[in-house]
Image 1 (tube, one colour):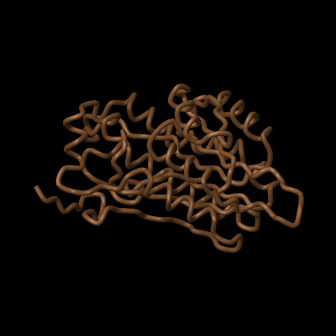
Image 2 (tube, one colour; image 1 turned 180 degrees about the vertical axis):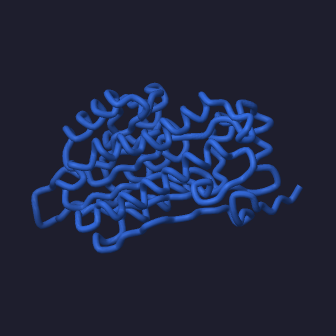
Image 3 (cartoon, helix red, strand yellow; image 1 turned 90 degrees about the vertical axis):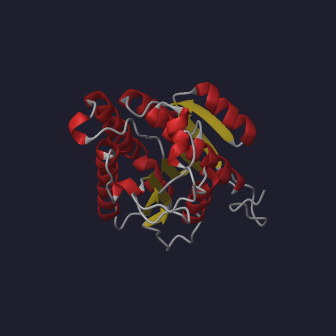
Length: 260
């Protein structure tokens, strides 16, 4: 492992901390592994503690597991307190989120919409609020928010998820302006089709989930983790505002080339 933070001329200092929400699977888990490999200690937060433990076991001593439910303000406060106790925090990856359902707007399920907004939007806002003092105090903070192509484009059946991710994009852009002059960089990562358990959770049916990626080679979680790791390891004067990532066979939220 290459430690980006050790200086052979000085006494070894603890590696800085990177916090990842929604780290029990998919992009969050891949990002935790990538940042640990880059030399960070990583704090993994999610509701599924057993899954977090499995991810942490793969990483080793650099990983710390803390329970987290981003829809619960008290859970976020406890998570932040435990994470900041570990040492200087440089990176927050606000990854927790997801989609539910694919109904037209007029047939949408209010509970699904509410959950998507609570998780994707308010979850990000509450998490950033909790970690902002620590990120600023460290002098080189980086906030990475997991958005989506759906936060910049729309498609039929995506009203609930797309509206939430549009809000996420607005929050991220606003943060970048409001934090101007402070030692914090704000990045949105906006992926297209990434094959994780995302589609299965959203659609609740394996065949329907598989159909989302039929006839193309989608991105995988490691592709997104690689982009995140690159963005947060740029020199301190370089701010990456947004990265859009698509598989080669995708040109937008509705535009795919499928070889069926």
